[in-house]
Length: 212
Image 1 (cartoon, rainbow, N blue to C red):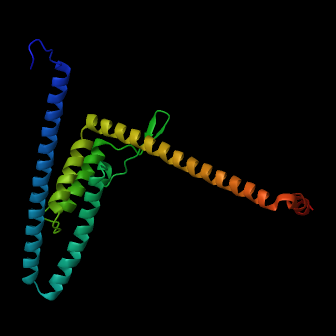
Image 2 (image 1 turned 90 degrees about the vertical axis):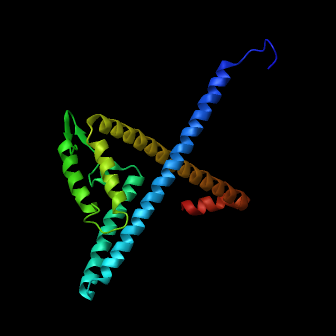
């Protein structure tokens, strides 16, 4: 660096922040990859154990076990799908909406409701009871959702973000509908003007005929 050159401290700090953010992003991606590998290993191990257990059963027991596993898998898929979309109420099987009439709240979820729903959901996907290979993942998803909804402050913040997102989605939907209607209006207007142009001198008699 030439003698007397000035160092742009703002640029240096910005570069350091950028590198730190990239480092955190790489670590988060690596942690996520390891977690996915661990989950897949557990899933494969559980599936192998189930298949081994089936071989020890007679035909009636095998059929019953397979049917129960299919029901278990349905519950697990539902919980994991809700968890992936960040729908914590749905993970616990709760309706995540509140109707307010004046000072009263109708259908408001309470901490007691959350605890009860957590116990039921946790039992349904507990790895010792649910035979699906991804039961561990679903059980962890239930615990994560219960941790958020069970904390009053965290739940209020989650509800606030849901409300903001829902309001944004409504605005986008309304905007899309208005745009479609406007496109249809322009299309109809263009078609009508084109029809008038094609009819040319015959348009007046046709108007008269249509009005009789």
